[in-house]
Image 1 (tube, rainbow, N blue to C red):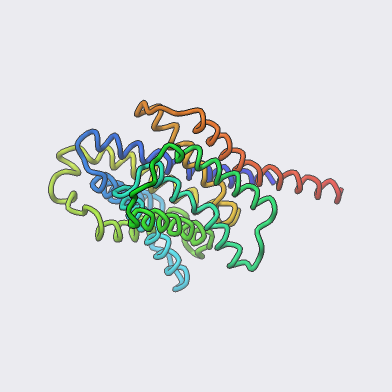
Image 2: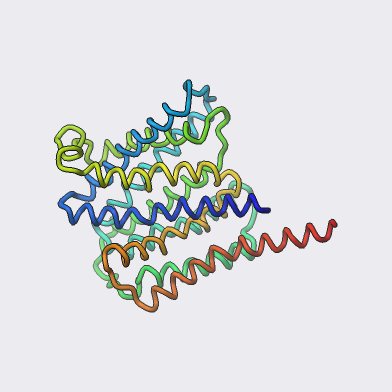
Length: 303
């Protein structure tokens, strides 16, 4: 029971680190860099950090089965794809609406998990998702956004980012035999970098922006909080709690994103957004707390 809580906490920490990224990118943009350059630096520096960790802790390359290698490829590609299409959605959508669309991964992930395991969502899961959905709308300030004249491309990219992230969480729920968590982080970050290099700004490696103009400082922060921490923690914890619950717990990203923007960027937060954050926290805690209570009842019944 205690170990289940620890794994849930690891997912919350991993998701929270994702929530810091948008604020770091905004600070980088205020310093004269583009969002594409900042995101690309995240994956470049993140990969090299993962490589350093791997060299420092591993003596040889792991022997990976064909199935395991495919899992690692898809985990990396989906990591890069999520970052790419979410960035694209911001070209068409207000940031608040883009966040709302991304956070549809909560019910999408649960829906996919139910299909894969041939089950219906429990009442607790359904209630939790409803609370999360309402909380997300309020926390993102969606009711203060004008939805008229928004291009269809924005809706498409935003919704696809949610699908991509939901599948990433489910892929991460699969164990890969013979590969350590650090090894998994290395392979995932490599394939993510491959996708990012195709669609964003790989030229920062040779045009001097990364090193000479100081983009590496933002890349270091983004690499730690956007690659190393979340991939490591999610790789450890998601197989233990399952993709469905992981989707719910990962909703912690939004409250952290709002808090970071208020503290670092000085953005204003409304009363409705505070209510939304509280609802998100309730929606996250509810399934874990009630499942722990049920486990205690079962243990008492056996004793």
